[in-house]
Length: 185
Image (cartoon, rainbow, N blue to C red; front, side):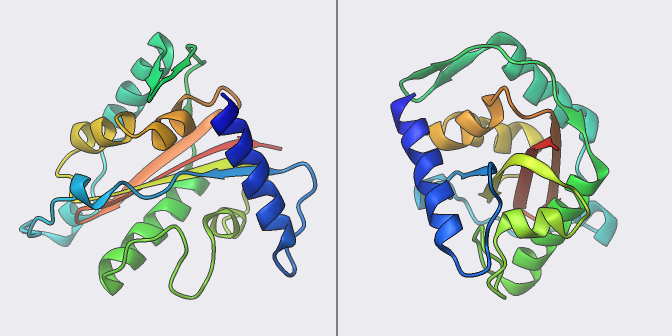
């Protein structure tokens, strides 16, 4: 709990110190990318481009809400159960655009190549939030595999279990995955 609180406060102060960034009362938590040992670059071999970008929404919601409903340990920190999340199309667009950008430009980061952080990408989709988070993953072949990677990473897991969040979306481009979670205003 202390690590999460410190990270939240640190990120809030850091973001508010950025020129032009002032969102009073907004806390954005950004889990670091998974360690390189978690990444397995796999060749993208889908026949149709539509399959390259396919994410099974129902499967994602079942996996995420199953985890949230039972509670779990995120690293050494026990997270209580939390209410189910609802899929949000605006968050989906933010996640999809970022996963496609990373895939097409061969990079892996919470910050777009043009310097745009995730919380700005979310607002650009006309989604106003009190708090938000982004998890990214690389090298996973399925919804189950990326969820296992996020669950096994304390920072990503805490984002998923955060009881403040009510909305979610996950998108993929090839083996680049983006999860966006938020609490709307």
